[in-house]
Length: 275
Ligand code: DGL
Image (cartoon, rainbow, N blue to C red; front, side, top):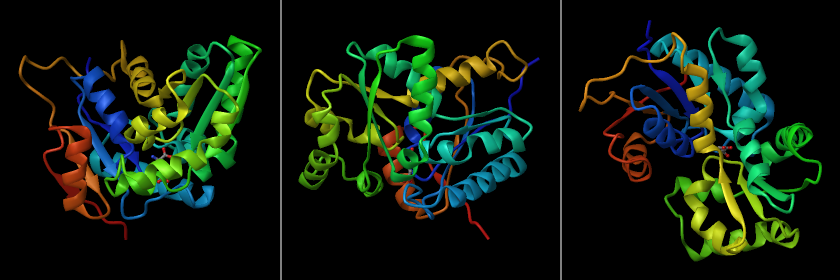
């Protein structure tokens, strides 16, 4: 048995495209319906209750309108606010991005001094702090964590500004506590941040490994589908899935910047409206 229904994926905007890219590469038979909630981004400064409400609304929309077989919450803020709630509310697998990255972070660190950066919502939720304590209990006891919120990073990415002087100045200021803590591994705890990886890496220095949860989330999705009736049937050579991309904001901008960030699979974007 195989299941050729699509996988739903969402983020506040472009950030989840890092997870979409990793998923398309790792699971080439699977079809995606990706929703960027650009009409309501950024999620980071909003209350966790509000982000939970948005996340439930989007998950219901993906299930009811697109009959998705599984949902990937490709946003750390939404994962922090809503993952457990979504898993309890909906009758199909819902996967988040937080736990996936934490395991790799602790494996990547030699010294045990690690950092996590994310939105204000993610960092203040305590979700990473808890996930790291849980993972450290399994892996190692010498973990010292430093967290920093990076307000402003998401907005630069959404405007398509990845390497400007303004981004660098902001990065130097916001990452200072992490640099001071002398970490050797830093988790990009927001799916937008891999697009700023070059500047973040230059500010942190060469000795610091950057860990993104995008690949790890794609692996977690593969573990969920592989060997079950939920996996799609193998496609014929040369036949690619018809991925769909939806935006609740400026669709033309989503199409233009989205294609630059994700690649040629983002042929066109469709409008989705919240009533
Ligand atoms: N990509 C989202 C995350 O991972 C960004 C949140 C936002 O819109 O502020 O948290």
